[in-house]
Structures are given as C-alpha cells and as structure tokens.
Image (cartoon, rainbow over all chains, first blue to last red):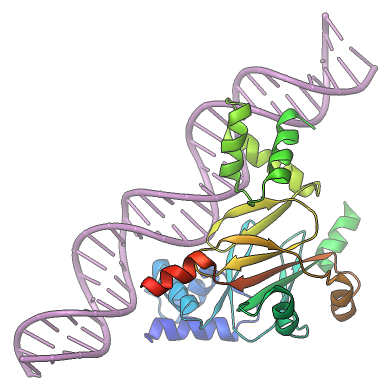
Length: 123
Length: 123
DNA sequence: CTCAAAATTAGAATAATTCTAAAAATATTA
DNA sequence: TAATATTTTTAGAATTATTCTAATTTTGAG
C-alpha cells in the first residue's frame, strides 16, 4: 500500500459523510498538496476492487465511497442526502430466496430528509 | 402526455432489459427517426419525477430505467449485468426498523453472472 | 384563429471519470 | 550496490453521460 492509498482509505474510514472522489481529493491535498485527482481515482478503484472500501452510486450524483462495515443507507429522494442506518442483516434471508451464490447486497431506504421537508412547506 | 413521452414509457414498460437513455433513444428512432437524445432525457426526467417510471443507477455505468412494479435486482459485480428478481416485500419490516416515513426502498443483490463465472475460469 | 405555455431541437457546456504516455518511485535481482 | 523491472503518479487530453440554452415548433385554451 502506498502512502496515498493508505491515506485515502483512512479518509474513507474516518469520514461519516460518504465522501465523493472530489471531497477525498480536497481532504488528501491538506496532507499531500501536490497530489492530483487522477491518483485519487486510481487508488479508489484499486481499493474498491481489492474489497477494502465500498462504492455507492446514486442517480445523478458522483459516486461516493464508504467503509466496509455492514450497514444500510437512507437516501433523501429530494436532495440525495445519504445517511447510515443499521438494519438486521438480511443475507440469510436473501440467500434463501435468491440462491446461495448471493455475495452481498445493497439496500437503500428512500425518505425525505428534514431539510427538504421544511423546504417543501415553504414552497 | 406527448407522443414521445408515451412511446418512451412504453419502451421502458415492455423492455425486460433495463434500457439506458441511449438504448431507449435507439429504439425510439425506429418509430420517430427525427427525435434527438435530449428529448429522451427530458422525457425520462419528467416520467421519473411524475413517478411513472423508475431510475436505477449503478456504479460506472449510465443510469437505467425500469417499470414500477415492485421487484428487486441482481447485479453482477464483474460486468454490471442487471436482472430482475422478485423477493417478498420488505416495506413493513423496514418501516418497523427505520421509521414509518420510509417511502420505499431499493435492493440490489450482488452475484457473479454465468458469463463472468465462465470467463474467470479461463483466466 | 390567436396567444400563451409546453415540448422539441441543435448544439454547446458541464461534470465525472478514464485513458495515455511519460516521469518518478519502489521493489527485485544479479 | 547497480541495473532492471514493476508499480504508481502525473499532466493533460479524451470520453461519456447528462444538462443547459436559446431558438423553433407544437399544442391547448379561450
């Protein structure tokens, strides 16, 4: 693991905010001011395919990166805001229904976040 | 509903393959050869925000569009191939755990498709 | 029919990400 | 240690998906 890879992983691990490549880049620049965005993408891809971090995609916005520990996500259908939520592990149940070769799953719960609720009252 | 909107919706409804905007565009051109891609995007956006169709995003590939009827997806982690799978409705359970203001959910099961399984043996 | 509103068009613009080729860093081996 | 091979980084161009803009066309109401 190179210093960049290590630090990028650390940023993803520590962050509670599902950072985008761009945000990780900004963070990384604080420590290595000379790093370029392509390096961040390279390392994120490598970390993802090594299974060291997880990529989350949501419609219309850049991919986000997340730590591995099992948890699910709440997604605001208005603004796309993403929060963690921890639900019981469904793997067993899913394997029973869909076959034992299921490797994992990705569950997003849709809701409207407080900010957007307030905003829609005003409109 | 304009003729374009109607036909685009129909294409999405009929297709079993979760088409991308591009693929829908190709299909639509067979009937209306003069239509442009922007029209497809416009209509897809409108249909999505009217809740007439559903958008599915997966990492690193263009968004796909799908009919509304409740079902979940199998995603191949190697090639991104998407299939339908119908699992029991989890809404009740999810509301119990995460709160009654959950509006819906999006569940993807990860697996390795047959094509990719074969291919990885060869490598 | 007339006017306003909505939809479509062409093409430029933007945003996210990947690619390319060269340079730098790191590891391996003689 | 020197020489070589491998991996990583860099800069910037290229690509892809999507949106935006402004002009034009179509539709719908009165």
